[in-house]
Length: 179
Image (cartoon, rainbow, N blue to C red; front, side):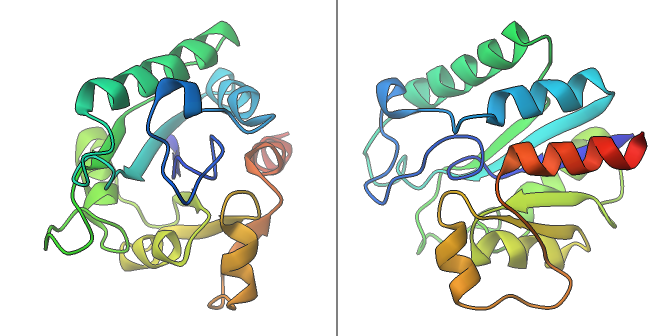
Protein backbone atom coordinates (compact mmCIF):
# COMPACT_ATOMS: atom_id res chain seq x y z
CA UNK A 1 0.00 0.00 0.00
CA UNK A 2 1.28 3.44 -0.96
CA UNK A 3 0.13 5.57 1.99
CA UNK A 4 0.58 9.31 2.43
CA UNK A 5 -0.64 11.08 5.57
CA UNK A 6 -1.41 14.78 5.61
CA UNK A 7 -2.06 17.38 8.25
CA UNK A 8 -5.06 19.49 7.21
CA UNK A 9 -4.83 23.19 8.12
CA UNK A 10 -1.86 24.79 6.37
CA UNK A 11 -1.26 21.75 4.14
CA UNK A 12 -4.59 21.16 2.37
CA UNK A 13 -6.41 24.38 3.23
CA UNK A 14 -5.43 27.86 4.31
CA UNK A 15 -4.73 28.14 8.03
CA UNK A 16 -5.67 30.87 10.46
CA UNK A 17 -4.42 31.71 13.95
CA UNK A 18 -8.11 32.46 14.64
CA UNK A 19 -9.06 28.87 13.62
CA UNK A 20 -11.07 27.64 10.66
CA UNK A 21 -14.55 27.84 12.21
CA UNK A 22 -16.95 27.50 9.29
CA UNK A 23 -17.31 25.99 5.85
CA UNK A 24 -16.93 29.50 4.40
CA UNK A 25 -13.53 29.85 6.13
CA UNK A 26 -12.34 26.48 4.80
CA UNK A 27 -10.43 27.51 1.66
CA UNK A 28 -8.16 25.04 -0.18
CA UNK A 29 -4.57 26.06 -0.84
CA UNK A 30 -4.14 26.37 -4.62
CA UNK A 31 -3.03 23.05 -6.06
CA UNK A 32 -3.73 20.97 -2.95
CA UNK A 33 -6.97 19.35 -4.09
CA UNK A 34 -5.46 18.50 -7.46
CA UNK A 35 -2.40 17.04 -5.70
CA UNK A 36 -4.53 14.70 -3.59
CA UNK A 37 -6.54 13.64 -6.64
CA UNK A 38 -3.40 13.02 -8.73
CA UNK A 39 -1.92 10.84 -6.00
CA UNK A 40 -5.18 8.95 -5.58
CA UNK A 41 -5.47 8.31 -9.31
CA UNK A 42 -1.88 6.96 -9.22
CA UNK A 43 -2.81 4.40 -6.58
CA UNK A 44 -1.90 6.26 -3.41
CA UNK A 45 -4.08 6.18 -0.31
CA UNK A 46 -4.14 9.69 1.14
CA UNK A 47 -5.23 9.99 4.77
CA UNK A 48 -5.56 13.04 7.01
CA UNK A 49 -4.58 13.49 10.67
CA UNK A 50 -5.65 16.85 12.10
CA UNK A 51 -5.81 18.54 15.49
CA UNK A 52 -9.13 20.34 15.82
CA UNK A 53 -9.02 21.97 19.25
CA UNK A 54 -11.58 24.49 18.03
CA UNK A 55 -14.13 21.80 18.93
CA UNK A 56 -13.01 21.77 22.58
CA UNK A 57 -12.90 25.57 22.58
CA UNK A 58 -16.49 25.75 21.31
CA UNK A 59 -15.60 27.64 18.12
CA UNK A 60 -17.50 25.12 15.95
CA UNK A 61 -19.21 21.77 16.32
CA UNK A 62 -18.73 18.26 14.89
CA UNK A 63 -21.37 18.92 12.21
CA UNK A 64 -19.41 21.92 10.94
CA UNK A 65 -16.19 19.93 10.92
CA UNK A 66 -17.91 17.11 9.02
CA UNK A 67 -19.22 19.65 6.48
CA UNK A 68 -15.65 20.84 5.88
CA UNK A 69 -14.47 17.27 5.37
CA UNK A 70 -17.43 16.46 3.11
CA UNK A 71 -16.49 19.48 0.97
CA UNK A 72 -12.87 18.31 0.86
CA UNK A 73 -13.96 14.83 -0.26
CA UNK A 74 -16.31 16.33 -2.87
CA UNK A 75 -13.60 18.55 -4.35
CA UNK A 76 -11.15 15.63 -4.57
CA UNK A 77 -13.84 13.45 -6.19
CA UNK A 78 -14.56 16.18 -8.74
CA UNK A 79 -10.90 15.86 -9.78
CA UNK A 80 -11.25 12.09 -10.16
CA UNK A 81 -9.65 11.15 -6.87
CA UNK A 82 -10.64 9.71 -3.54
CA UNK A 83 -9.59 10.78 -0.05
CA UNK A 84 -8.97 8.07 2.52
CA UNK A 85 -9.50 8.10 6.26
CA UNK A 86 -9.74 11.44 8.07
CA UNK A 87 -9.02 11.34 11.81
CA UNK A 88 -9.13 14.31 14.13
CA UNK A 89 -8.32 15.17 17.72
CA UNK A 90 -11.21 17.16 19.22
CA UNK A 91 -9.33 17.95 22.44
CA UNK A 92 -7.70 21.10 23.72
CA UNK A 93 -3.98 21.34 24.44
CA UNK A 94 -4.44 20.73 28.18
CA UNK A 95 -6.93 17.84 27.98
CA UNK A 96 -4.28 15.13 28.41
CA UNK A 97 -5.38 13.02 25.44
CA UNK A 98 -3.13 10.67 23.49
CA UNK A 99 -4.33 11.75 20.05
CA UNK A 100 -3.29 15.41 19.94
CA UNK A 101 -0.15 16.03 17.91
CA UNK A 102 2.76 16.15 18.77
CA UNK A 103 1.69 12.80 20.26
CA UNK A 104 1.31 10.07 17.62
CA UNK A 105 -2.22 8.83 18.47
CA UNK A 106 -3.82 10.04 15.23
CA UNK A 107 -1.10 8.43 13.13
CA UNK A 108 -1.52 5.20 15.09
CA UNK A 109 -5.28 5.29 14.36
CA UNK A 110 -4.53 5.50 10.65
CA UNK A 111 -2.02 2.64 10.88
CA UNK A 112 -4.57 0.48 12.72
CA UNK A 113 -7.32 1.31 10.20
CA UNK A 114 -5.20 0.32 7.21
CA UNK A 115 -3.29 -2.44 9.08
CA UNK A 116 0.09 -1.05 8.04
CA UNK A 117 3.38 -0.20 9.68
CA UNK A 118 4.23 3.48 9.59
CA UNK A 119 7.99 3.09 9.13
CA UNK A 120 8.97 5.41 6.31
CA UNK A 121 5.41 6.55 5.50
CA UNK A 122 5.49 10.24 4.64
CA UNK A 123 3.59 12.51 7.00
CA UNK A 124 3.23 16.01 5.57
CA UNK A 125 2.68 18.89 7.98
CA UNK A 126 3.48 22.52 8.60
CA UNK A 127 4.35 22.53 12.32
CA UNK A 128 6.90 21.24 14.80
CA UNK A 129 4.11 19.14 16.34
CA UNK A 130 3.57 17.41 13.01
CA UNK A 131 7.28 16.63 12.76
CA UNK A 132 7.39 15.28 16.33
CA UNK A 133 4.34 13.06 15.75
CA UNK A 134 5.94 11.68 12.57
CA UNK A 135 9.22 10.94 14.31
CA UNK A 136 7.48 9.21 17.23
CA UNK A 137 6.18 6.45 14.91
CA UNK A 138 9.11 6.35 12.44
CA UNK A 139 7.22 8.16 9.69
CA UNK A 140 9.24 10.27 7.26
CA UNK A 141 8.56 13.85 8.42
CA UNK A 142 7.85 16.28 5.59
CA UNK A 143 7.41 20.02 6.10
CA UNK A 144 5.61 22.25 3.65
CA UNK A 145 6.30 25.99 3.60
CA UNK A 146 2.58 26.74 3.32
CA UNK A 147 0.51 27.42 6.43
CA UNK A 148 2.82 27.79 9.43
CA UNK A 149 5.65 26.05 7.56
CA UNK A 150 7.86 29.10 7.09
CA UNK A 151 7.54 29.88 10.82
CA UNK A 152 8.43 26.29 11.65
CA UNK A 153 11.37 26.29 9.25
CA UNK A 154 12.74 29.47 10.85
CA UNK A 155 12.90 27.67 14.22
CA UNK A 156 15.18 25.01 12.75
CA UNK A 157 14.40 21.43 11.85
CA UNK A 158 15.73 18.11 13.08
CA UNK A 159 17.87 16.10 10.69
CA UNK A 160 16.04 14.07 8.10
CA UNK A 161 13.02 16.33 7.58
CA UNK A 162 12.19 16.82 3.89
CA UNK A 163 11.00 20.32 2.91
CA UNK A 164 8.75 21.27 -0.01
CA UNK A 165 6.99 24.49 -0.99
CA UNK A 166 3.49 22.98 -0.74
CA UNK A 167 1.45 19.82 -1.15
CA UNK A 168 1.50 20.12 -4.94
CA UNK A 169 5.31 19.95 -4.84
CA UNK A 170 5.18 16.88 -2.57
CA UNK A 171 2.82 15.13 -4.98
CA UNK A 172 4.96 16.05 -8.00
CA UNK A 173 8.03 14.61 -6.25
CA UNK A 174 6.34 11.35 -5.25
CA UNK A 175 4.84 10.83 -8.70
CA UNK A 176 8.15 11.62 -10.44
CA UNK A 177 9.92 9.04 -8.24
CA UNK A 178 7.50 6.40 -9.53
CA UNK A 179 7.93 7.31 -13.19
